[in-house]
Length: 247
Image (cartoon, rainbow, N blue to C red; front, side):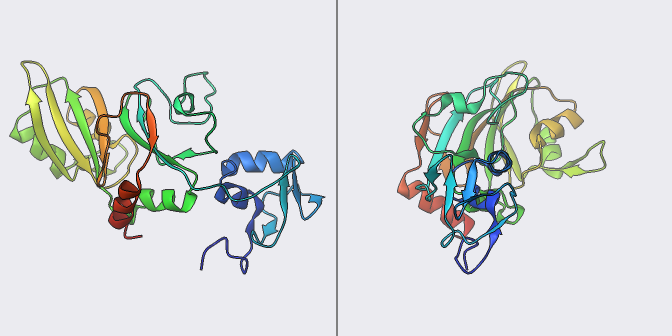
């Protein structure tokens, strides 16, 4: 049974997020500010229990209805942060989205120095499935390193390294794409989503990362989408991702 089914009660902030109005943290701020009415009365408790299909929710005088589900891909440029707002005033991925879109959230992150394929959606349950460790959804990266790679380096990347925090990091696979006299392009595939995983693996091996681009998530490929551009997933792409997630 769906978490938003009328027979179950969930917190008001979570309902606003699930209906695609805003993020859960932004919903909590709206509620505490007295801008949300629940069944006619102002509600200031983000955890107030709600039956989303029975109870009436009004935000800033407007009745809240479920937004159509949106599934986007963005070719994230380097130097852009994956967040709705940044306390340091840095450019965010939202600067590259159509202002007419409903609220969407990034599905996972790419760090500021990384580029490439980023998914965004207002379907929080689907996003959770993409990010779930048990999905083991492959993420494919093209990585330029400041070294000449050999078979030994490839073996070290896939065998794994111990980190200073006592953790263990490895790649599912790695191969050399092309090389020069001082650098090499690698293709590295991960099937887990640990923070800055590739950079941390290579740092442990004494290798400098010059560029890092995500080119695929499961069967979905970035393709020829220009840098900074976004588009909706096609029905075929969405179905292929769902099959990979076993949805």
